[in-house]
Amino acid sequence: MIQKSDNKQYFLETQRFYNRLFEDDDHYGIKEYWHGWAGNLHRYKVKLLRDIFINTLKCQKNTQILDIGSGISPFREIFRPEECPQITAFDISTVLIQKAKKICPYIKSIVDDAQNPKIEGKWDILFAGEIIEHLPRPKEALLKWNDLVKKGGWLVISTPNRHFSRKTKEHISLLTISEMKKMLGQLNFKIVEIIGVDVFIPFLDRFLHKLAKYLPKISPVSDRIFQIKIGLTFRLPWLARDIVYIAKKR
Image 1 (tube, rainbow, N blue to C red):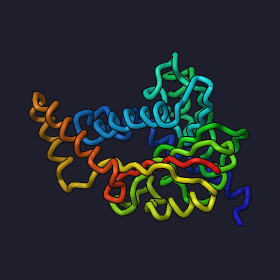
Image 2: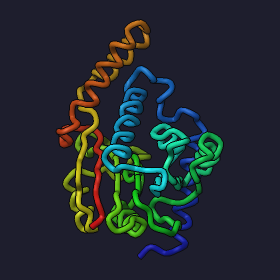
Image 3: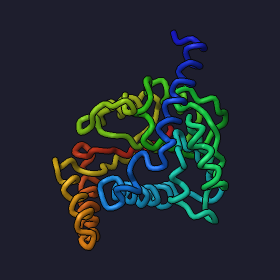
Image 4: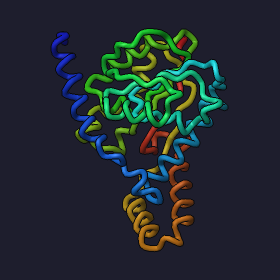
């Protein structure tokens, strides 16, 4: 059994780890590799999430969304300030939350732990974008997240596919589609859609990035190839490097 003192130690150690990482304004290389894989993946996912939240989930201004492990919340790009739903976002990194409060003050941003959230309440939609793979005990986290979703509410999770990813100091809990299906089913969530993002083609990402870097005029072409490649697995999630799960709470 995990003791409270262990939880506190985990929280502080994890917070220090991510604070150090995100002192770098572009830790994930999105700005640096805007015409490479990171930048193109970011642009594709913003469009995809906008479609999910606006067209699939029909979000309105009074929709209540909880963004878990938010970083500088992606909702600042998904919604314009004047159309933004009621969003509460939390992250374990005080560095990121301080940045988020400056960049998107219309989103309520607080410090909390995705593994052991202290926040109370129930939301229409819970979004966990690229966070569950960072947690040491994803099943326990999902159990706690379940309590934060209203009955009939939605859970949207994006995470790497274990078959095409490798563990790192950050990605410590990689999951397969079958593992996610099992965990969500046990929590009485019905998966409505599973979306694949990006197909793994060895060396292609590096080649396209170098092409755009050394021949800038060709970047629109390389960007277009990236966008096609990233969208190839939309209906073939088992071949995708990253998966988006849309599930409804029964």
